[in-house]
Image (cartoon, rainbow, N blue to C red):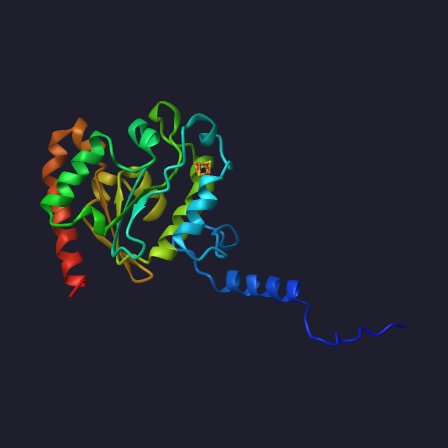
Amino acid sequence: MSIEQPGLFGQPETKKKESLEKSREEQYIPFIPGIKPEEAYLELKSLGELEQRAKSCRQCRLREGCQQVVFGEGKNDARLMLVGEGPGMDEDLQGRPFVGKAGQLLDKILQAAGLPRQEVFIGNVVKCRPPGNRLPHPDEVRVCKNYLEAQIRIIKPQILVCMGSLATQVIIDPRARITITRGKWFNRQGIKMMAVFHPAALLRNPSYKRPTWEDFKQIRDEYYREGK
Ligand code: SF4
C-alpha cells in the first residue's frame, strides 16, 4: 500500500498558479449574458495587454477578410463607454472605431451633448470588419464578445451605451428590440446601461434624430450627475 506523502515545500508553483486561476474563474460573475469566465481573459489586467491579444486574434473568419483589428479607443478609465456593432470600411482602413460618416455624426452628437470624445471609450461588439458590412454571424459574436466583456471589466464604466440592435441584444437582453428598449435605463453590477439608435440608422432614417437627441440628453445628465 502506498501512502501519498505531502510535498516538503508545499504546492509546486504551477499548481499554485492553476488553483489561483481556478478560484478567480469561480468567483467571477460575467457582465455580458452567456460569457464563460474561463473565456473572459481574466489573466489580462490592462487594456494594452488585451489589445495585443486581440490584434493577434484569429478565432473567427472575420480576420481573414479585414485589414486590421479595430480594438476601440478612448480613456482607460472612461466613465462612459459606447459600444456599436463592428468596424465599417473607414474604420478598417484607419484602425479606429467610428471614423466614417456614422462616426462623424456620433462626434457631433457627443459634442452637442457636452460629452468630449476624448473622455469616453468607444468600441464595438466585433473587432474585425464583416465583409460588405454584413451583420456579424452569431458564432463570430460569440467568440468576439469575450473581448468586450474584458474591456468592460477593465474600464469599469459607470454608464454603458449600446448603439443599435446588435450591441443592445448582446449586452442588455437577447430579446430586446431597439425601438422599444431605447431611452430606458437598465442597471447591472452597478453599471447603468442605455440603448440608443445606431448613428448609421440616423443617416438612413432622419426621424430617429429627435429621439436619439432625447436619449443623449438623459445620458449627459446622468454622466454629470455621476461625476459630481
Ligand atoms: S472578430 Fe474578434 S474573434 Fe474574430 S478574429 Fe477579429 S478579434 Fe478575433
